Image (cartoon, rainbow, N blue to C red):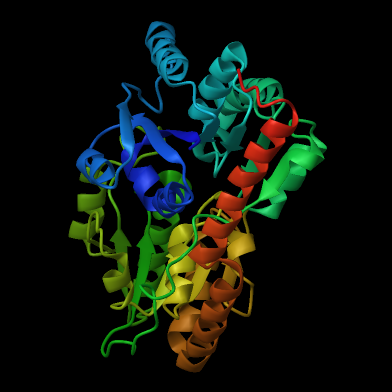
Length: 383
């Protein structure tokens, strides 16, 4: 039995994006370990038979001494467990995990950059300096010998190969986290005022401010609509909005804020259009779930979003950071129920064809099998 260790910053992200893959790997014979910051899902992961390695880490932390402490925790975990297979998810786990794996001679590594978020959307001199530093580090650590790098969309894959941070033979496309097509299924649209929903962490990078501005424009045009935000702030992210700001918008009447919800399928059954005006994504799970539920969607012509949404077929794409264009696209779909329904049908078919969670699980387990086989071919030595 091979020991598979996932290194991921937050237990909630592991549960929302990687749980099905870990369960499938366990069924395939792997012993699954999860190195993560444990918040609310520790007991659930233990009950599933995973071995939990709690980690003290802040995603946005930059203090050198604290980060050295995180690196020391990773070193101790890898040295004690000596996993045959490693799966690093997001920027900090990739950099710290790959560095430690290289030092310990652990070869079979899957690195998954996912959306890259704030690093690639931050503006100003600080944002440019941060991107330059991250790109330099990724060139050194993203694709070490014996590794594969998993991308959620073709655009990020091509860019990383082009800039030399990933070897073409090591770049793998696995489209997002997948969608359970039985859970996220179409329902009869509810009667009454149409509801437009944005589901995400409440971050500026997700286009929340533009969504609120578009809601104001729709109200000024006397369009019959309820605009709803679903999600919580994420204080660990520099782009996070505050609870006070969200409450002010709700008090103003521009939007409704429903907070964090675990039952997104039930939320989507109450809605008519899904909207995510994000500045950048890996592959937006919320939009795919909405499309699986038969909703037309409005998003941005940005990396990750344009790979999810087929403009004019499953939804509409508008320029990022453009509240006026967003309002016009939403108004078009709000006024045309037949177009909404046609896009909803096309969206579900697209998700079933490309983004079904069974496809994602199958491809991920196959990648693990390939890496294990390659490690045996080179002598079975990960150490």
